[in-house]
Length: 241
Image (tube, rainbow, N blue to C red; front, side, top):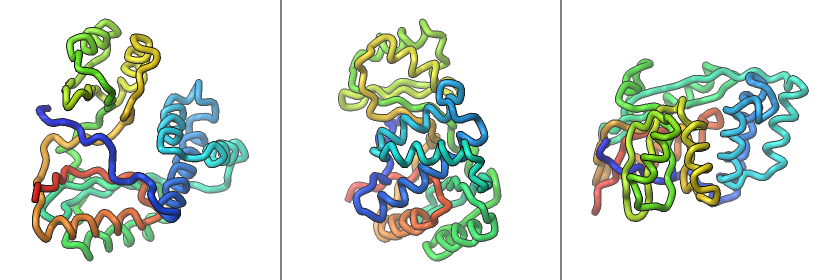
């Protein structure tokens, strides 16, 4: 792939408001995942991955448990997935994933975030083909060959491995997430993953600069303010000033 993975998204909770939104999004996603696939993390691998991710993002245990308990009781809420694609400020490509109980409301809010920030929402598939749905692992190591051998011995279909400033970046098809994590953990039980997630990785990046940078940040903030937005993926790369 020839590019280092940008370790963490800019969505780390820093204020009470951001934390509330983060907890709400995880609670909703855990509920939907448990309702659709079962409440036992051992039998629902997607739920297990989601719980691990929530803990890494410091989501309180009671938020996780409430989402699962809600699914046990039926919850009474039905959410549909929605994905919107388009171009952000500076021509960067953007994918927005949502969980919603009102498609019309969600589309209106997401569309307004695009329209008001010099961005253009497109039809399904507009930019999705320019991203790879990948399992991504980032951890401290510089022994690229040893990591690759470990994964190959476990018959993991590795897409790419990169070394960047003392960190190994492993990319694999999203379907290989648990196989890859098991192989890496069995090889080094105390290995700490800086990143372990399934995400959309851009095949190339669009550099944005000047006034587009402020507009892009405003655009992301507008999307983050939409309660139904769960994840935002983009290929923007901020130019060095």
